[in-house]
Image (cartoon, rainbow over all chains, first blue to last red; front, top):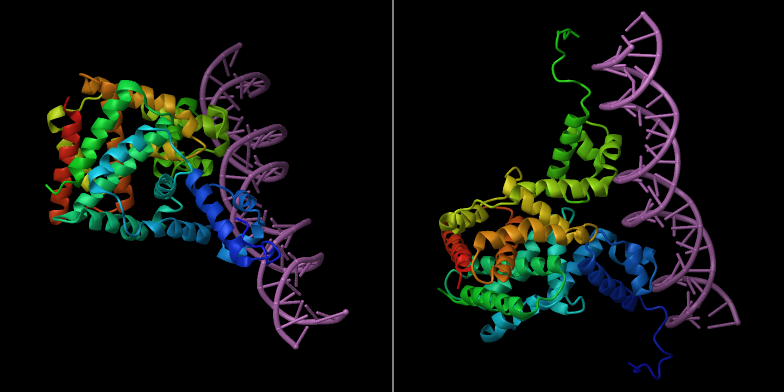
Length: 192
Length: 192
DNA sequence: ACGCTATGTCAACCGCGGTTGACTTAGCTT
DNA sequence: AAGCTAAGTCAACCGCGGTTGACATAGCGT
């Protein structure tokens, strides 16, 4: 945090830092609110001026694409453990949405993008590259293509369900939910 | 010019018919485009004036709620055949989205509503009443509550996947997809 | 120290779209 | 036929929000 000792604190004019701040805020807002969020909100959260969005990214749409790409850059190779994947996922899905959780944010972002007519067109290629291909590689084996599609669909569906549900499940309902979801995921991971 | 008939055909001023036309167009547009669609578009498609939306519904938000309720009115009791449900669904999901297909339209509507921050709040109760309860009753048996949640989530997920995918699957990929999806649905329908 | 340029600020601009109210007219009543 | 009311039309209003360009200034090179 305090690594700028010799230098006179963080430069108050740092294009790169500002750009990064805007991008970060954009990822957060696009994930939380969707494409309808305002540039003024994004800029405000980044502590920057609206006009800089235009300067650094060209416009709202370009910022969105950039944010989307950046959001899924970390997703290129999956590091999930096949043995525990299903259970962890189910537990996560049974709970409440955490906006700060990186993975959730990424996929909410994807979801917003997919369901917004303004952004859906720019998505197809990216989904292929950043979601289906990694899942396919992670799955491996026969017919990984189609199996990846099914897995991705199920995954997205549970995210939507949680989005609609809003609150965490409890008691026996939670147990049953986790158990069933785990079973679904495990069945989909299995090769045949 | 030459329509001096005795009966002037359908009344040119029919509040009820106009209202119905607007509602129908609204359901279509909200499902296809989402909440961002314009009232001018809706009114245009209905052959009515924008101002009539205000007169008959009060405003855009009220129209949306009305359209959403109306859209799911027909969904209160499900009549799917448990034996063929999974397979039919999987076949449908492997194909392309048809905007005119009633069931698809309803769920796209739901999806748009769920993922739009402007409308998500008005959705929770409706989903309970018009989606989860019917599915739960249809499923029956032990823990129908939690199982309905899982089924609904998976269902929605596949609809999103198809939305993103855009085009129909073919060949072996389609076969595998259909087979896996069918298996998932059947597993979720089964009581234990 | 002086200026140059990249960085950041500010205030408009402009179209879009929901809303509003005044106006026109069809269709019924008397 | 005259008039009244509901149904429909029209044009303007207004805020929102993305965009734009003019302006201010920090920080570096000379």
